[in-house]
Length: 180
Length: 180
Image 1 (cartoon, rainbow over the protein chains, first blue to last red):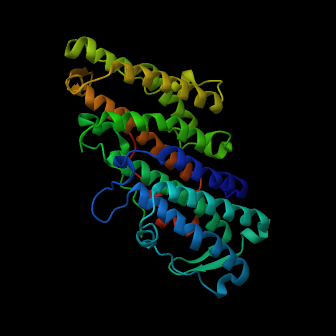
Image 2 (cartoon, rainbow over the protein chains, first blue to last red; image 1 turned 135 degrees about the vertical axis):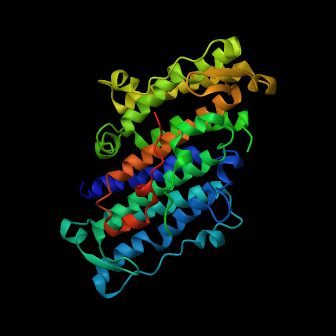
């Protein structure tokens, strides 16, 4: 399937609301526990999504439009949330994510991108040449990879509690972890 | 981690709201497409969750309390939604799921289960002896396995559109599919 900008934008509007409905005021069992050493909790993941809003998606889109392949993207810091989320509550992070996402989508809509813009190329520090279309599709798929991860991290907390049903629960057999 | 009935109930209240926020009125690209032959779309999955509310979780909980291991559970029909969702809209299914879940949670709370109740044993047609505690933990983890699946099915639609970023998106490498 081809990338469709309208479908992408609609999905991007949903993620903050869906995460809010799932996570706000949930017991810490579900929000602060992770899958073991050096893995992320739902709290960490929301912080990671915030950092993406600040430094990844729209800054990279604008760099493609301004510089094309002549000036590569800044590398993305996958551990920034360890620093930036410190001392904040999950409710605060959910608010921050919703606000930044709304601002970014306003900016994206205002660009009024046409198909020739979407075909423009930029330079990723590790992946090489990418298009604006691929970047925006990845923004949506990145939301989904972290919704996927959050549901897995939460299910992990009941790995023992479900007893023999673990055999039937695909989420407990997921190896689809995002690479650094 | 042990099963905690309060944590289970709180999570079970969230799933209908979170799915509603994610899916209602979303373009059909996201809600009606699946991962290929004999796989499920988000629409199919919501139908499956509805069938669980009708025939699986509370009926099985009540059977354990009433009959213990002397009368096994009815097998669960994993394909019922193909029949039952026919002709319905996703919005209708989301409403139905929310209503049934709320009714079931009212009934569950009214049982006022104590730890000796949670330890009671029942008979699963394939898994053998299970406890009420395991059944209720599985109800919550089952929500999460399907949230995990929905995010994967949706991301699958952009498998090509993300270009080289597919290498970084764990959701596109998930093999954690639920068994029948």
